[in-house]
Length: 400
Image (cartoon, rainbow, N blue to C red):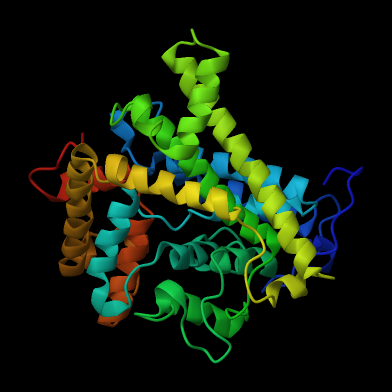
């Protein structure tokens, strides 16, 4: 952090990290959380985000967000929030950089398809897959698998949306129906991530940064794709207010500059609201350290009630006018079909997997085989998935 700004007492301190699963010498030049950021940036999974779908697949245009550009935008917002709240910026950045590493090709359509394919084997969850990527699938070091990230980073990746279980072990939230993913449970047997507690404030602001980034930039991409017009989004209360202010100040502003100014102001407004609301939450909790934040009865970082309502309105608009637009749905349905076809083919012909993925698969049980195939597919970029489909099948959709 900036040497002129003191770290808040509720911030994580890299000098007092709970450490790594595999002990390593302390770096002379980088903090533990800075090393985590660097390891994530240099990972293979991070590079693959360049060709993974955010909303639009890679061949629909060069200017749409990919998982990589979205991730960089989330990291920028997360650092801004962390700086204003006197948190550890490196930890917030690392969590933002890694938060989407577990996403399969073709965005949420690919995730839904893999979840269907693994229905009999515990399902597929991209957050759990992110943990699997950074603790097992990245093979870069001579003495351990994974990136050997700090406890605080792993905790934040797993719990950035809140606790997964109650104190008595009962699954919470999205995990009530099917339970906590086995990938997470397997890992916490080796290193307890306290699934019952909230994560650090850094993890909480990284999660809110994700909301801020895709609220603003999915509007930008939706306008660029002409799925809706600027006057359509202006019918939503908060965007309409911002757009009205811009038009009053700059009545002759061209459409392109109007959109950029809108996105800039929306991001700024959301950041300022989160800083103010989180500051109030922290003042009320008065935590003496990060463990007080973890054991709080609720999250401390988030939007104010008014802006939270506005955020839900924006998401509701995007859901109906963008994510479920017939044009987007057509492409995503075809993309999901590609994922399902690949999973089915590899399940029937595991010898068609690359040699390094096929090692020991013949002796593995059905569950382990399905999970290995899912790991392979989840790591694919959009274009590699399409290339594999074209190699294995007679016809492949163009996805546009």
